[in-house]
Length: 214
Image (cartoon, rainbow, N blue to C red; front, side, top):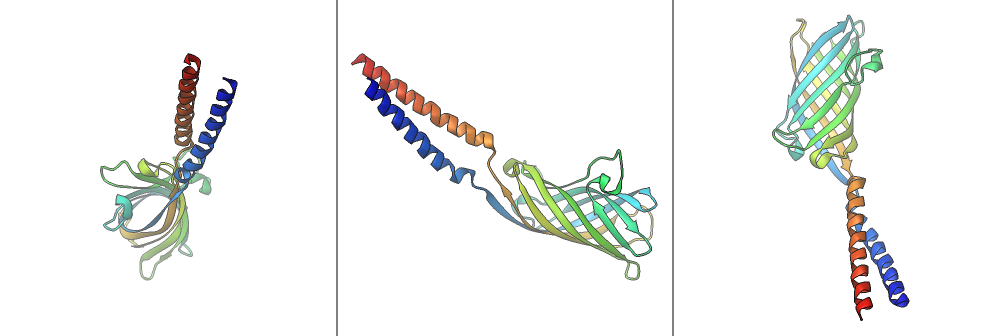
């Protein structure tokens, strides 16, 4: 009886080891290349003479994974003497207190798959051609659906005409390029291991009961 139990303990250890090896491919990260162009409509809200809160919705016809819509909230500080400005989704980057944290999202209409990120960058206002150009980085910090654990970095550029009229929404183009990764959540892997352990336990119990009845 003792030898039989030892046999099954060794077998159980081997099974768990094999199970652990087999779960390695399941927890490997998946990389998603991401390149898209969005038509945007930027609206600014003045906070101080040189600080603004910027809202930018947009739509795309070529974004992959069905992420055809983007939306963002950011904060911008402009030096009107030079036309140079910087922007960030985090208001404290400009010593703004009590304002909501900004964001950038990518999602599809009616889809549960979404990407969440933060963004920062710089731009320049050309007062001669009345255009605004900017570039920066989007840091992917999560998501929903199949992108729940997404992380990554995307580069972006943006161009739009400048209007001298206050409160006018500005149409423009927003292009993003890069990649992000997803990794299965640890609780999923833990659950799979738990199933394996339970299976080994049931096998051991069944064979012990058979040995006792003999």
